Image (tube, rainbow, N blue to C red; front, side, top):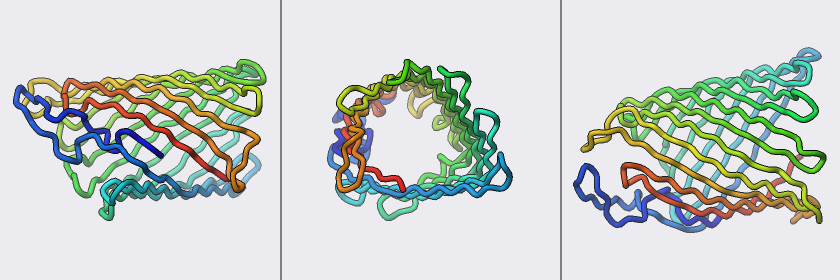
Length: 277
């Protein structure tokens, strides 16, 4: 995974905050490099009734970057009932996850998620979820607080070889310090196309606005970010590498902020190899 900005850091050697110049710490500065991302996801559905079962999942994701500073480990588990409702599926699950950065514990998250997938017609499909959690941060307790995330995706079939996806998201996080509390509103549009020669492409463009609550330190206004992203995923459906299915993903992100420290851009190129059992 080559990336131009592992830390989402600024490329500026100095920034102004409240009219005062600051030199960003090393961890807040842009740093490119290579990272290896690997993990495993396991899911099991235990039937209880004809239209109801218990779905449980377990997953772990590892990111190894240049030096331990950029390494990340996440372990997540969920469990809950899943119901089949006509042409749809609804799942209510409890979830918990633990994340480490380097060798140090970073955060503990627990809560619940309600999600569903519904076939509205031959052309329309709806996927939606709402997640309510509490995040506890080990090294930064002032960020601890509740979080809610809602995502809605609407797919419109364009025939046997593709569909258009419209997606909207809202994310709200409350922290112990008011200037760290924020909510995000975003949306994206993408087009899935099964091209000739066994190639599938999925280009997507998105935009999100982040509004913080309290005034940023040394300023008289809250932080406000605008984030735009473009990307595409390319898959060769009939290609296998050592029994693994390859997928190439490119993305570009540009984040602008009224607080210069949080303005950044990044390019990512991911080669993903997956296998389902």
